[in-house]
Length: 363
Image (cartoon, rainbow, N blue to C red; front, side, top):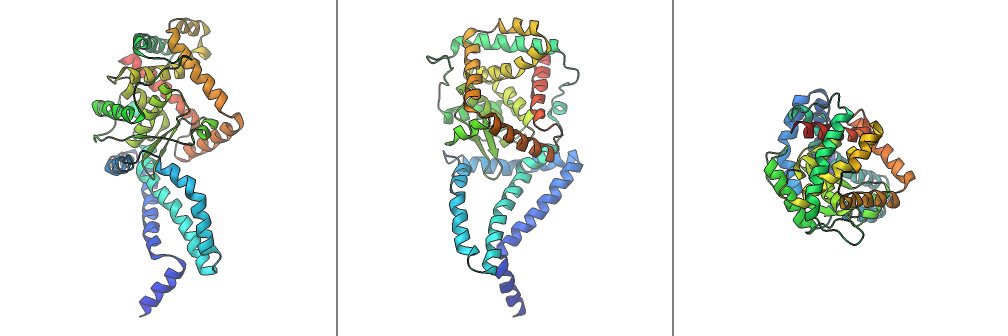
């Protein structure tokens, strides 16, 4: 009888089901802290949770729309309903309301730890693939750009362009997703599991363009969401990047590299073109900063159609973004990465350049 009364008293303030979430949140915090202290432990956890990431990604791929975007769209409505239902009905109901909101954030935190959180502390990919990213010189960057330019020039004749000069993806987003999954399966890039997922086009892509975000992986749903306001070649490159997150690659520089590594090895000409043109855009400013003469030389070598495609994307990014909003977004992202053990913050994205250069110089 006393136990029943105790249960009712607790349930008046805190729903009993939320205790389960509190427990998993506590365990997740402990696991995350252990990962920050042990690379081997982080590797084991990241491998152990592969089926969980796969399950989420495959399950949500059954829906052609972004579940997370839909949730965000209705979040304010849900919040208002909860406020009306709980917050205005006395102290007990207010506690239940607060806990309902807290549970949403705790569920996101739990999914974050078990999908990407621990991955920030795994063995760096340069060690796994024996890539030397130390002492990269301007000559190394130039040589990599020569290889990239040659690949682009060989692929350009097989690429279609619209009247403005932008390349045209020759298939749907769904078909693109399957082709990229096939490329991942062929390379077995950082995943022992073979499964098909799809990227989700975002309805509010223009909002992401304001902050210069081309895609976003959502831990809670396992979805790879894509900004459709970008050029086709960037959409393909971004899709491969976000799919890398689905397969346990947490660090942004590593996801950039794996995205390139997989697409550049694809049997599909447009996917290869996308990988190389995106890499060209990453490395060209680096060479320009280091040596203007080498920069001018490499620019003179590329097919004019490809460079126009690239420049159209650059102009598109500038015209559709806001310096103020993008700057604020960068600061938030910088803090997020630093909290998760990436001391360089958003500058860590530049490490993808080192990985690409090292890979092209040794393969």
